[in-house]
Length: 241
Image 1 (cartoon, rainbow, N blue to C red):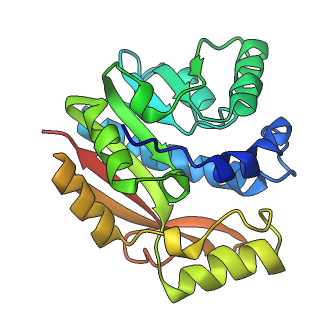
Image 2 (cartoon, helix red, strand yellow):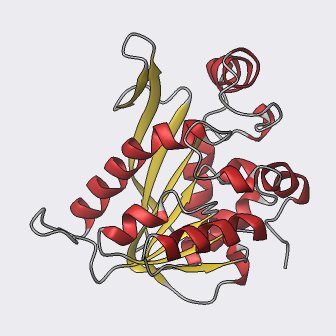
Image 3 (cartoon, rainbow, N blue to C red):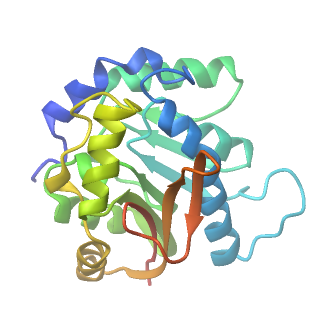
C-alpha cells in the first residue's frame, strides 16, 4: 500500500511541535482560524445530522476522526461539544503534545501516531483540515478518507486552491512578508483546485455537498467565510452515500 506520509513534511512540522498551543507561536494562524473552522464544522454537522442547538453537547453520539490533528486544536473543542474524538497524526511529537494537553484539560480523546491508511475503524465524521496539501499520493489519501467514513456520514476537507492569488497570499505574503507561518510550510504546486478535489472525491465514492471559501479581510484584520470567494482557502463537505 502506498503511504500518504511525506517524511520531509513531517520533519518540517515536527521541529515546532512543542509550540502547538502557543497562540503567538508558529501555529498562530491556525489559532486565528480555529473559530471559523469550528463554526463551519458545526454548521455542516448540524445540517447533515439534523442536530439541535439545545444543550451543551450537540455532537454526543457522533464518532469523529481528525486526520492530521497536530496538537489537538480542533479535537479538543469538538470533544467539549460531546464528540467521541479520535485524532491521528504522523508526527509522534505532535501526538505527545496533544495527549498531554488533553490530559491537563481533562478531556478524553483517543490520539494515535498513525497515518490514515493504518486506521481500520469507521466514523460518522472524518475531518481532513489543512492536511491534503502535505501528503503523498493525494488520490489514495482521498480514497482513505471516504473509506474511513460510515455510509451516510460526512467528510470535511479544508485546503488551499491553486491560483495566482493563493501563491501571492498563501506563500509570498504569509511566509515571507507577514511571516505568519515558517518559510517552506507550503508548496504551491501541491495546492488543489476544488474541481480536482471534487473529481477525486467522486472517484472515491463520495459526493460533494458544500463548498465555502475562507479569506482574510484586511479591513477587519481577521478571517471570514465566503459563499463566493474560494480563490485562496476553501472547505469542501462530502457525503458518503
